[in-house]
Structure formats: structure tokens, C-alpha cells
Image (cartoon, rainbow, N blue to C red; front, side, top):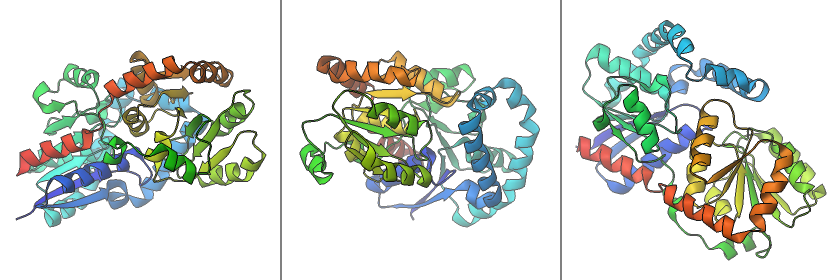
Length: 372
């Protein structure tokens, strides 16, 4: 009989979804005796609420990110929202019951805290015997991940593991595998072939600019700043699901001083990272894990307070990223990096040492060992 695994994330255009897909691919790679359902839990339980929350989140992030910084893992907020969280979990438990009764999973893997909390409470309330795994996609764990009925935590780093232990999670339930990313980021691509296919020059450095899966951040200002720099380089921009930004930049790109290529939601990020000298990006967990796997130096501009700032702190401490406080500082750091090959190589070496490109396989192998 095949073993059944339920993967749960929120939001189709998100790092949580990318992580769940990476784990799904790894599970299928390791076993033929498996059946997988990979589900957007918000879309399943609260399709209308999903749209409202996504819209609200994007509004807060773009207009008043400091509010998100205040809300993120604030003990006062956690305490005050406890009853609301319990009410939401109770409301969603009936739909989850239908799903779990019909699919009968041997393991549930959650790459976001919301579905993890619902399943954790459901397990505890109904005494259900199913393995529940939490997969963290940021370096700092927040309080909404903490449940007694989670059987295994897969975390990005030893530091994350220590923080969970300090919050009362037993060390034997925590495994520092890294953030799960697609196995294609392990492969070394043919740089010249990729560069030629994009009609770029192999002799001029390439800077990759990203705003995560949803194209968030001051990308227009970054591109304006880059185009005014008196240094020779080419630019690739990946705008994710932000269609408005993509259309704007594609329309403007013929006027740019630098050779510029604009992508929307790209499925070849591994190739774009392969040919780039450095990346300017928001520090989402998946993006930075992919960049580390490609040994790519990272410039971070205006991280969102909360999880992105904590990710930034981790990367800066390990000397694989540079936090740029103002757009004007971009020129200083790019000049320094592109004119100093040794400094660039040192960062790449540290990134390689810090990277965990086998994370998805390690998670999948552990799950299979537990349920087979």
C-alpha cells in the first residue's frame, strides 16, 4: 500500500509554495511507493479570507512596513490573538476533518505556520495518529510555530534550532536541514550557453535584481540608481507575480542606459543566478537559500522589519550579504565588489560553505524513514 503525504502551504505565489514543491519533488525522487497531495490550505478552508489577508499583507508591507515589524512575533500580539487563533482553528477543523478522513495521510508537512497550527490543534483535540512536520522557511522562528503535537521541525540553521530549544521544543524534534529548494539549484549550468540565449555579453558582469515571488520592494528606484552608475554591467530583473511592475519595466527598458532584460514570473531563476555576479534582492528565505546554493553574493535593500530583518541579520553575520541602508550606498558596494574579484570570491566561498542545497532531499528522506 502506498504511503500518503499531505503537503500544506498558503498563497500560490510564495516561498511557502516553492518549498512544498521542492519537498514533493524530493519525495517522488526517493520513493515510488508514495501518494502526495500538495494543497493551498487557505484556498481550501477560507478562499475569500485568503484574498483579504493577501491584500492586507501587501498593503501593510508596501505602505507601512514598520507596522508589520511591530506585529511580527510580538509577545503582546501573540497573547491578545490567542483566542482569535483558537476560534479560526475551530472553524476550520471541520473542513480539515473532511480532508483528513478522505485522504488519510500518514504524514502532514506544513511549510507555513497557519496550516501547521490547525493540524496541530486537530491532532491534539481528536487524538489523531499522524506525523506532523513543520518546515520553517525563515531563519528566525516565531511563536505561531510552537505546538506540542508537532512531531518534527525542519529548520534553516543551528541558530534557528537553538531558538526553538529556548522556546521549549525538545532538541530531538528539531533537524537543521536548511530551507528546501529545488534540486536544480545544485546543478552547475553552462554559463556561456545561458548568456548567449539571452543575447547578453559574456565579458560584462551581470547584476540580478529580484523582489521575491511577488515582486516586492523599491525595484523601480533600484533600477533607476543602477542605470545612473558609471560602471559597466548588465541587468536582469525578475518581477515575480507583479504584472504591473513587469509591464512598466518592459516598457521603460529600451530607454535604460544599461543592457536590461525584464522577466515576469520566471521558472529559470537557477539559470539567471548561474550567470550573475551578484544579486540585489529582498531577503525572503527561499530566494536567499537559492542564492547561497549558487554561491551568489547578496545585496539587501530595505528589508521588511520582522522576518526579513532577521534573515538579513543572519546573512550579514555570516558575511555572505551586505545590507544597503540607502539607494546611494548601492554605488559604493557595487563598485567595490565588481572591481575587487578577490572580495567577490571570498563571499562566494562563504556562501558555498553556508548553503544547504540538499535540504529538500534531507527532509524527504527523514519523512520517509518515519512513515515507511
